[in-house]
Length: 247
Image 1 (spheres, helix red, strand yellow):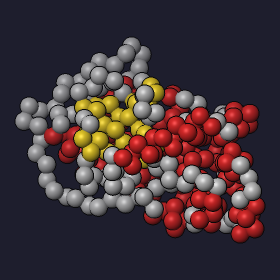
Image 2 (cartoon, one colour):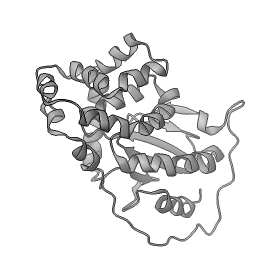
Image 3 (cartoon, one colour):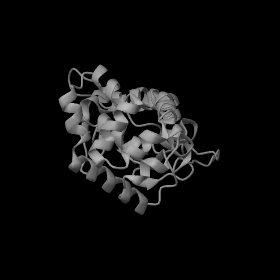
Image 4 (cartoon, helix red, strand yellow):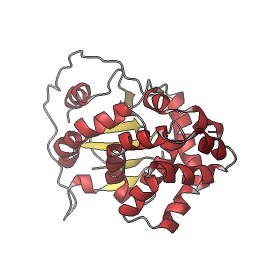
């Protein structure tokens, strides 16, 4: 992640780079034993309200002992991830995670400086607000792209001389990510601290590099009980795999 990366990325590159999923409509067979029985959640909660940080750097929603463990790598600047967030995540959460039979761990795959800025904000409050913040940033993705396209060349040139932390703050202001955060209760001091957190940046870069060693084909990418699902990027492709695993 160098300072020049931001300047090399237009909105079209943000929309396409590293965000490819090949369609695979092959049929899958449901688990012969049928779905697992629901697991009672902790008192006063449902499983979608149980969120924790993982050693790998992600955030896990649901029963940590669920028999079906799903890991998703996503990018906040990936339109395919936005599509899954809108069409797949609600059903995954409500029909499977809340039953206690499936846990969902999300790991960020950061592709560019805009992605890094948005991701630092999504993780700023820790586990509890992470999933709502991720969902709401995805909803703002198109507006973020539009504001990015409007950045004048002279302003892009100015960003070259900034440190990474200063660039993240500038990108947050240019794209409206800073106002997004403030509207959701993140005070300016907290926002500045999160955008300047080198340890958090290093963790995200490390997570992305480890994902590269696993040869994920693009984002979103899914691992089901430790196995990478090839050519699965939509809810229509993922749900049969969950059922096959006994979710």
